[in-house]
Image 1 (cartoon, helix red, strand yellow):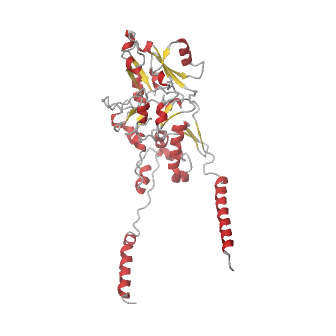
Image 2 (spheres, rainbow over the protein chains, first blue to last red):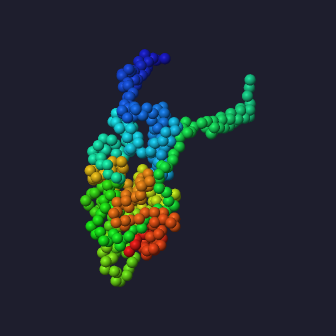
Length: 138
Length: 263
């Protein structure tokens, strides 16, 4: 084998450069965010379904809620724990999780799922505060 | 140990079959994660076979300046006011007789009727042309009560429905409506719409679901608007239709509107 020295040295440099991002960032991973529960959510103790399910599948549940409420006009959800809730993102989900920026946004920002258009129409709690809450008989 | 080609293929085929069958059997028989969960309609929801409205223009014409039904709709549904007729969002509004009923071509129209502003809204047709043309089924007729609904989540803003509706009952959001909603009078429980969707009257589906009649009907002090089940011969609307001469907008088109006018 000719030029073995050059080839091996070249390979080592190549591997070093390719893996640079990995060892440069080693041990510097930012910790997973902890979403904060609002006072009301803490008191409720349990969401519409168990925490583990909500953690992994809240997006599927929200889609199902949306379609069932709008298209089938079934607007009450009975969870697997037997408790019933009105189906409403704006009033039920965010009524309890009233701290969107510390609850939803924390993880969504972390994983980069921020292109949600829910709030183009639905009012988030912060937006609601701008609306004078009148107890009109709507 | 040797394995002939033929035997190898047999074993491979059988194990593939067994694997597939086992997987689907497991999926079929395994308990779902949320087996016990279910969807229901609220206990007090108002129900009907076909919702309809009768509008008594004899009573309405006596209150020329009144806008109670229009204003309450603006407020409960967060309808924006762009202060520009080109962008206007209309759910329930006033339209003069000759525009609302162009097919009534009498040469000599009763003077009182000629310029009379009629209360117009989505007719919730039995045979809605907007539903036929919608490519995404964002607008659809509810099977259970005939309400022509809007699913803003699905609307792609193509505006076929606006071209199809012969009553101009549909409005397009050319711009973000939220900054133009009156926040002092608005309803923080109800969403706004977004730029790029078509909206219209939904017979207050969100109120029917909790046992309330449409806001405009409730707001009218003169009881001009009457809401009820067209398929129930004992309903108030059927009683009015029995005892009064009523007209509908453009009935010759075969859309079968569910809004009737006493003139």
